[in-house]
Amino acid sequence: MTLEERVARVRAALARESAAWGRPPRLIAVTKYSTVEQILPLENAGVTDIGENRVQAIRDKLPGLGGRFSVHLIGQLQSNKVKYIIRDVCMIHSLDHESLAREIDRQAQKANLRMPVLIQVNIAREPQKGGIEEENLFPFLRLCAGLPGLHVRGLMTMMPLGAEREIIEGYFARMRTLLDWCRQENMQGTDMTELSMGMSQDYDLAARHGATMVRVGSALFR
Ligand SMILES: *Cc1c(COP(=O)(O)O)cnc(C)c1O
Image (tube, rainbow, N blue to C red):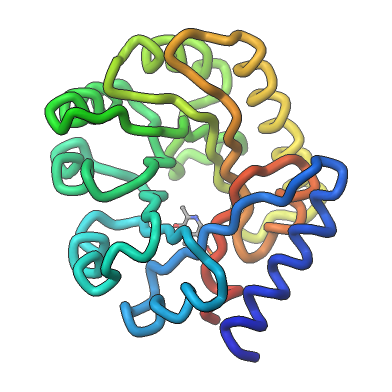
C-alpha cells in the first residue's frame, strides 16, 4: 500500500466511526520514526498536521519541512526545553504539571504569543505515564486558565498499550465526559473543544467516542 492509500484508509474509518459527531477528527500524522524525506509526501496525501514527541527531532526536521505542516508537540516536554519550540509548534498536547504550565506561559509571553495547549489526563492511572489524575483536572485547569500565555483548548490522553478494546472504549467515553464538563464550566481563558486521543491501534474507537484529533504513526508509515 502507498502512503496515500494508508491515509485514505485511516480517513475512511474516521469518517465512518465519527458519523454521529458531525465531523471526523483531524488526522495528525505522527512522524517520530520518519525522516524528512518520508514526511514530505504527506502533503500530497492531504495531511496538514504532524506530531513529534521530542524537541530535538522538531529542531532537526523543521528546516527540511519548509513550513508545509503545522507541528504538534505530543510527547512529554521538559520545562527547560520549552524555549526551543515555543515559536515552532501550533499546539502542545502534553501539559500535565504546574512548573511546565508556568514555563510555557513565560516563554509564550516573551515570544508575544498565546500557546494553545491540551491538558494530558492519565485516565488509566498508569504510574509510569504522564498526565494528571482526573480528580486534579479542575484545579489544574483553573490554574492554567489564569496564565495569559496559555490558551487551554482541551484534553489529551494515551491508552495503556495492548489493553482490551472494551476497556479502551470506556476510557475514551470517560474522556469525552470530562471534556464536556470542562466546556460547561466555560472558564475564562479556556476554549475546551479539543479532544486528542486515539493512535494506530485504536483511532477508530477514539473517533466513535468524540475525539477531535487522532495521533496516528505506525498505521501510516508502518
Ligand atoms: C508515538 C505516539 C503516537 C502514535 O503512535 P502509533 O501507535 O505509532 O500510531 C501517538 N501519540 C503519542 C504521544 C506518541 O508518542
